[in-house]
Length: 96
Image (cartoon, rainbow, N blue to C red; front, side):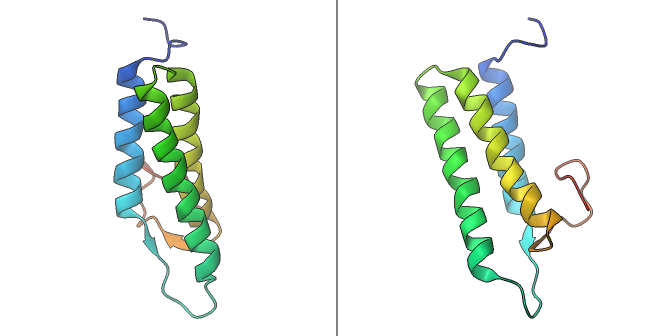
C-alpha cells in the first residue's frame, strides 16, 4: 500500500487519535472564556467525527479521512485560541 492510499486502518487510526484527543482536551476555566463558542466548536468536532464514521460505513474512505481530519482540526483550533487546554500533549495537538 502506498502512502497515498486511504485505507480502513488509516481512517480507524485517526478516529481513535481524535477520540483520545477529544477526551484529553479540557475547557479552560477562566473568566471571559466564550463557552458558547467552545460548545459550538466541540459540536462541530463531534459532528465531523460522526460524519467520518458514517462515510467509513458507506465505504467512502476518502470522505471519511477528510471528515476525521476536520474533526481534529476543531479541537486544535479550540486549543490554539485558548478555549481548551491540551495539557502539553504535542502528539495529540498542535499547541500554541
